[in-house]
Image (cartoon, rainbow, N blue to C red):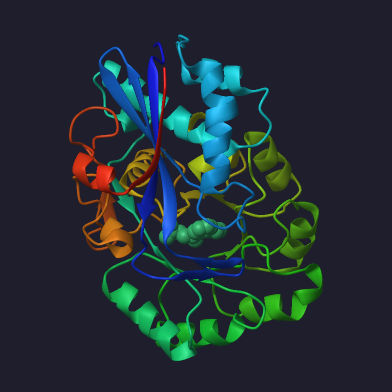
Length: 369
Ligand code: OSB
Ligand code: MG
């Protein structure tokens, strides 16, 4: 299909809560939405980047620059038969995976619409109901953490993930474990620890967690393997895996036993499927991570989560938890009893855009082609 025209928007997106992690606070987000036009069809993509360069160097503004200056000039006006062909044209660009991913996702949506198939079928999915958990930021007190945990458990989320950082880790988690003895619990450190924090990891190891997400450096695999050899709780890799090759290396040396897949971190659906396949070959389960997405990103996450080896609950919690009724898509992407249905309003991504709301929240707009 020919990429005739691409429309990029920087949207104001006000999260309903302050989301605090070991790297900072996310609030008042800026989100990039991308619409690709081809043969009378529209494909939708979303950049998963946020405001602060703490998870990755890719922020919304950095991704805007990457799309405007490097990504879109290489593809607009050109014809691509497959997502793989599109990605080949972008291979010379190092990094900027979230910027590339938004275009790749939109291209898949276009192809699914052209084939009159739901995206999940084109991707090779095997289910239409997705179990999800909730990711709970660092709270002002242990009491509030337990309260948040009880609330989300009562809503039916299938597992609860808590952000931790040095000084905010074993104590709140032990309190949550005492309050919810049978709940699936996990922690996400976003790279805040070192191997020398072994005492803390041994404390976490006693709490029957499903996994400890990205405890060590964002670009490390070797120290994670050392740590994994000393713990019974599985390590889940997030920041360290940008490709199937990273997944292979990490799993081969025992750097973890679980992988969090995020479309933005692996250049889109093709990269995600390859990571998923490598993990399956190693017998390692995967789950779909979240980046505080709007409805377009959330819908892509749900379609991706239909692949066979997504056997652990993902981060795609109810859209209304983040945005109230101010999401960018008409469909309410809300979980019921911890289960999301894959959007199916028409072929492709199965969602429609709220054009008035999008127009109102547009901070900047760029049309190429
Ligand atoms: O590490 O998984 C992470 C949000 C922003 C950046 C990094 C992460 C997260 C989350 C949020 O954990 C998950 C969600 O979308 O609820
Ligand atoms: Mg994470």
